[in-house]
Image (cartoon, rainbow, N blue to C red; front, side, top):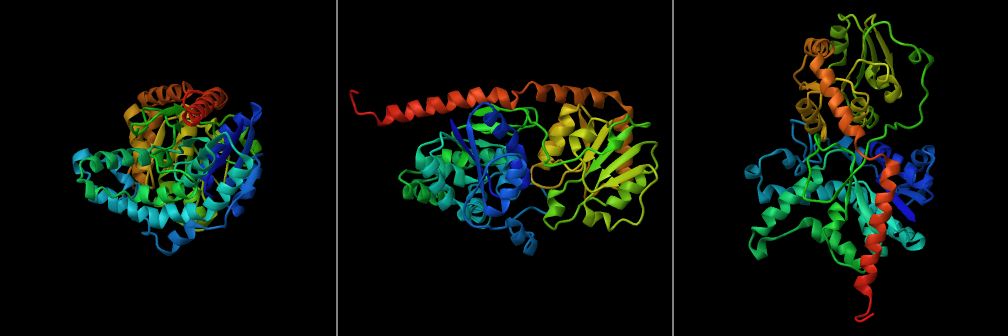
Length: 434
């Protein structure tokens, strides 16, 4: 089986996809990973074969010039219209969804996909994949699959805000008069489908199935077919320092606020100096991974703290008693797999939704990063370390994640899925009476 993975050049999305690509490769399948040319080194560093397609286009450069370009609320979280996943149905309007889609297609989705589509389709026509795996914002993958008749699945890197928003859109669209049923997604993706010999279908937006790394207790799900997959921690090339080999003398706590935002020129929402000062009052060993740009803003480091630019989180978490973080899915999932209580300061994308799920399971506490002081973080951490119910909740979350199929187990599921799709396509095109 030939399997084509694709993502626009966003490292955190790729890292969530790499373990499944490895599993398929080691099962004997041919695997290629397509993205824009500048992303080839990230792919090859993971031991995968890169296929550069299209031209380089950096969404983050646009966002650095206009941070409000995607229409994100001043409360943080998901940009419009994908923030509707956390609203009551009665509060969601047709106008908000349709106008939000039009905005995101023009500003976000076209910027990420148009540079890749033509050459991705050309490669697919040359290589003829049996299965295409695309992350939920790289619609170019679905277009390429449709162009060659391949089976295709989305692979989520967090909660399915996109599928839930589409469910609400379709519900409200069905209630509209015939002339008022505009659909910006169908207009955009349908044009590509017709160009390559097909018609628009909902699978171009939400896939023929969705591979889901998020345990159901944390997930926002749409009315779609989901294939659960256990998250496997992978953060790219890393070296474990010798000092992590021994057991800590005091309770060890990790503090990480993410590298993606600062790597693209953004800043932490949390007051890092205030947090460090407050945590310096506790009888703990604090290990903080802080981006170099943010480190330069610090004027002092507490005696109980060690600061590094980067450490492999899975190796660090294995030695910790709790983790303080920003609710990036990779960080949250790695912490959960270690059965550790979490103190979460969520802000961006689906972080607030994921954090709420962790709190519901009893595995941690959530603080508003815009409002929380260093003292609030200190007191929250003290509760996590002293109250046993948080460790019990963390154990429950860990067990739910471990119950999900590992990448090697999902390979057989994808093999059968692809074979069934191939049989359906063959039957649909067979002459009558054949």
